[in-house]
Every structure is written in C-alpha cells, then in structure tokens.
Image (cartoon, rainbow, N blue to C red; front, side, top):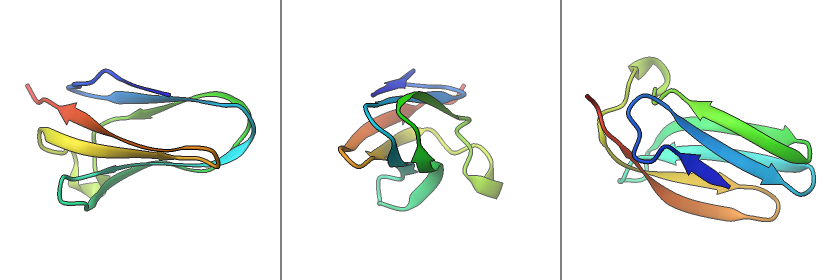
Length: 88
C-alpha cells in the first residue's frame, strides 16, 4: 500500500494492491478518533486500486490542517498511519 503525497495540501491518493479479491475499508479519523471521511468501502477484485481523497469531510467541506489517522482494512491487513494535511 502507499499513501501519497504525505504531507498533502489538496488531495491524497491511497494505492492498494490486493493479492486476491477482498472487502476493503479505508477511512480517515481525527486525532480524537472521530470519523472524518470514508474513502472506500466495498468488495474489490484482485489487483491495484487507487482511491483519491479530496480532503473534504461530507458537507463540511475542506478539513482543517493537522495530523489525521488513516485506517486501511482488508481480509489480510489492518494498517493505521498518520496523514499530515497542510493548508495554503
């Protein structure tokens, strides 16, 4: 998997390669654990998938700069990491 760019200013791409078809859930959370955005959720076939996030949170628009936690879950992996967002 790869998350780029990080830090980001206007969008971020989550790239994920699945060895076999799998349920996928990608989400971003605030440092306090609140869901900020659901990037992907569903069943995806084997292969590489790119999920682009425009740094928006539903109807609230662009999220403020800061450090956020991303979560990538599939049948074979459960990964968390930090995503830094910088506004101009």
